[in-house]
Length: 208
Image (cartoon, rainbow, N blue to C red; front, top):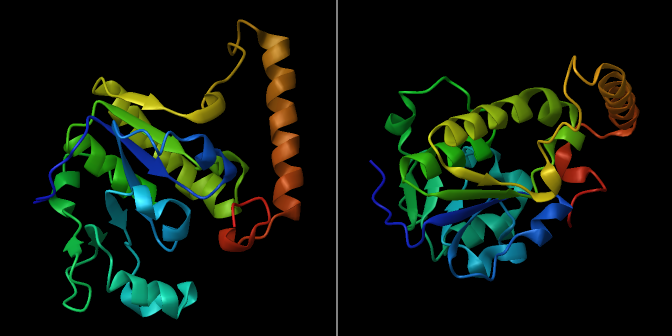
C-alpha cells in the first residue's frame, strides 16, 4: 500500500504540452506530480515522480535520465523497487481493484492514486490528448476521461485549462450549431492526424 504522505489537499498532474505552463506550480498549496524525463521543466517543484515503464526500454530517454533516476530526491513510483534507484517505490496496484481496467497512460495511474489518497482538487495541465497522436486520441484520452469521471463522481474538483472538456452546444437541442461544431472538430482532427507524427515525443507542438 502507498506509504507516501500527502502534504496538501490539491495536486497538479502535469504533461508536456504547452498548457502545463498555466499550472500554478509555484503555489505551495498544491503538490506537483511529474513523470518520465521531464525533471528539467518542473522537477524543482515536484513532490512525487512517476516512471511506470520497464527499465529495459528506458534507453530511449537517454543515459542522463537513467542516471538522474538513481539520484531522484523524491518518491518515484515504478513497477517495483529497484535497489539502484533508492527512492523508487512500487506503484500500489491494489488500489485499482474497485475500478474498471482503464490504464492506458501514466496519467491514469496518477489519477487513481490521487483519488485514493484523498485529494480534494486535481489539476490536469499539459495533457492535450484531443489534439495529440493517434494513440493519445483513441487510446489514452478515453482512459483519462474515465478517471476524470470517477474523480468527479466522488466529489473531487477536477481543474483543467481552457475548458478542455467543454462542448459548447447541447446535442439535439442546439442541433444545427452542434452539428456544425462537431463536423469542424472532426475535420480538424483528420487534418492534424494526417500531419501528425505517431511518436508523441517528436511532435513539434510539444514543449521541448
